[in-house]
Length: 107
Image (tube, rainbow, N blue to C red; front, side, top):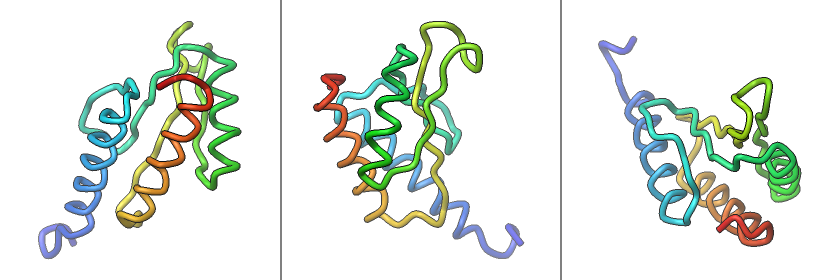
């Protein structure tokens, strides 16, 4: 299938790059890489859970990870991007992250 049509892979790559660029511009610390899974570093377990709950109220479902799933003091929010996301979805998510990030004084 990929030999005939790379449009979904290309869209996923675009979505990932766009989200990472905009979330970094907003002031969040992310782990760079080629994956469509974007770790947004918060470093505090309770904060990761609080932020995930607040984002859910904004319509954004993400998971907060903390020790023992990740190393101690490396708590994060895990964002999973897909080719099914449209730019409007990404913009909504970025806006929600900015809103909640400001409320929690992360950015």
